[in-house]
Length: 107
Image 1 (tube, rainbow, N blue to C red):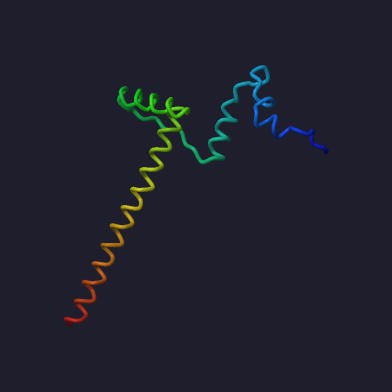
Image 2 (cartoon, rainbow, N blue to C red):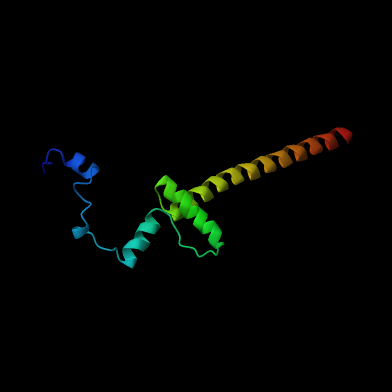
């Protein structure tokens, strides 16, 4: 199969693949398959209206939707939170090891 010259550029510039005349809404099974493939799970959460409006304003400023912005912020928070938990557990482990060593010396 031969590729038409300039096809990659046409896709990148959206000359190909971006026509609304050929677009259609994906069905529920396709959306579920996509979410499963990229590891997403739908949740329901109640947030203050002011917070959602703030997310929408910030997301609009950055040229994206507010839900992807929320997902990004949550991922950043969890990454840092996990680091904090690991550091805390390592410190507790070091303290326990030091205490065990003290008890051995005292015995």
